[in-house]
Image (cartoon, rainbow, N blue to C red; front, side, top):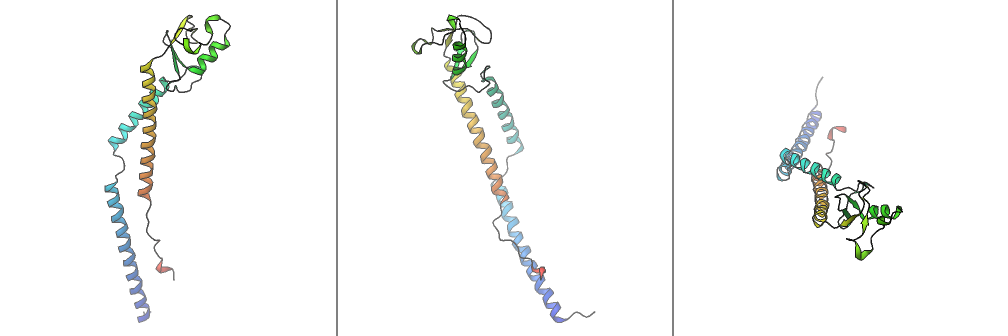
Length: 177
């Protein structure tokens, strides 16, 4: 079987085009390596630290939950009783309103500290509502930590997505002819 000059020239042209494609892909690979060095994915130590912190935030969120409705307590919404139990404002008001006992009435707005409430948890009667500023501050800090965690996770997802995108034209298949 003889190979003609025309076939030989076509093979050389195909090889030249393939070399160009390889060179083009080498540029893409170099750019991706540079991007990976410039924008590294989270290190394993940083990832483990983030996971521990995230677990701590979740545990704290469970601690700052109303035992009646199981919703997270929000700043300004937490009501503590002298017995030490804490509820959200809506739940303790509903609890007080649903009872017939005189000391279960919801407090008047100006007499919050003096109003007597029976605790839904331990049933201690005559417990007064108290405002715990440290608890409110802890709830505020927890909410901020949750927002920062969410922002960090979104930022990491965005960074990973950007590294996966290659903005080069699709290579032409020169052998398809």
